[in-house]
Length: 153
Image 1 (tube, helix red, strand yellow):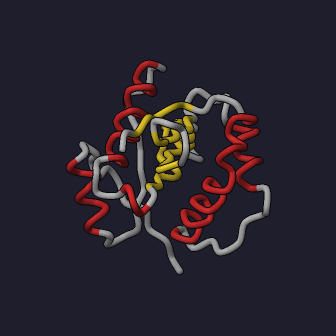
Image 2: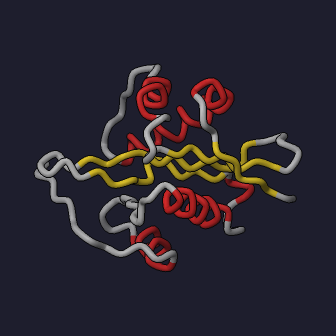
């Protein structure tokens, strides 16, 4: 099965993928400890951010365009003190039948290529503490651990 990766550039075009975006977005929020989100949280994010040069929505689909096999959503991470903005992977999702074939890596590679063309040399990602498999995968792809986030719970 051949996979094509395309960039979604408008909110109208993104609406085709809202079901997958919502599901993947809710999973990402749950990993952050947030169990509930407004029904339109993804539509609101896209409407507010899709035209930002640090925002990318990439869709991986079969060559015939028949099915979404994966998606990558990158958005700006803004440091609250310095205001420094860094593109960050917000959602990376690959359909279970397409996993372990390099699709996630291809999505990240394409995001890095597109962001580089836009003048951004960095791409950030986050993962849960102690997720050694995810950390190892990120390091194999060239990500470096740069800081730790501590939370008092």
